[in-house]
Image (cartoon, rainbow, N blue to C red; front, top):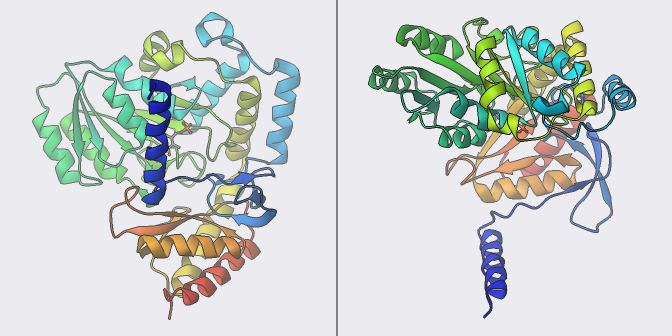
Length: 403
Ligand SMILES: *Cc1c(COP(=O)(O)O)cnc(C)c1O
């Protein structure tokens, strides 16, 4: 067989194996803007279903917010569609600098640098700041982009058990001879909606003279009293050295990310960080709309307060209905069903009831912890949530999950 045919056959087999193992990811096609009510084509070529979306990271409902759309259109008219350049050649506009200033001020740090995504931000931060004289100490469940970014960096790599501060301390003790140690953690872990214990992590960082970086992608804009993030929630603003975050979730949801921190570090990233140096500038449209999203959040806590009320309401009602959830306050609510087969059947039946949720099971989460992950949004009204609860109860009874 010629190589071209062998390659195709090899990957066809891989695909079949994924399907066989129920690991194949099938995409549903949305025919409407992102929001609470969406129309979805699934399976392919079937008529559109009107469903309520409970699986977007559209926490504040800004993805299709009228003021954000208007800002995007204005940016398009005033600054064009693309820059056709990287930042350091001719790709920096006034509004890119404005967004950097605003996001830095918003989270309470000195300066910020934009990337095309938070994936790129995490991919480009470690290698530019640390080398073989240093150590990185990372929570084992950190986001894939942190893991990849660490792989590109020459610093000694340590992983501590998820949320285990004793284990973190053990690694801090082991690395005392290093020039710099950097602790890295997600602010919020997306499979569980669980928040890193930043107050205690800050204490350890101080005690062992380490720097701390937090990826607040699932927190910026809505966690903490005024939405500044996990550090606000724990009252440790000013004690986290570096924050990375995305504009692709609560802040309008289009694209882009950034690293925020002390000016000297941000300036070095502008000189050395490869995804910044060798990848195109964020579109003016995205920048203008993201600035608007930040302004809306900075002006009023109404959206994060509504999100908070919605999350509390859903958590209370789903527990009262008899489901097991992971306790917390975050709008990510994992409904623990434990069994992968039940989770898949549940997600399918809920979809038929007009509720779009996603199930997670091994290998995405540990064996025996299969769950439906619900994500609440400020775009939801009470009636959306009530409908979801009714559907969960109906399907739960049908599948024998509820008595
Ligand atoms: C979503 C996410 C990212 C990736 O953000 P993008 O801007 O979509 O690349 C990085 N880190 C964490 C913790 C995330 O949840």
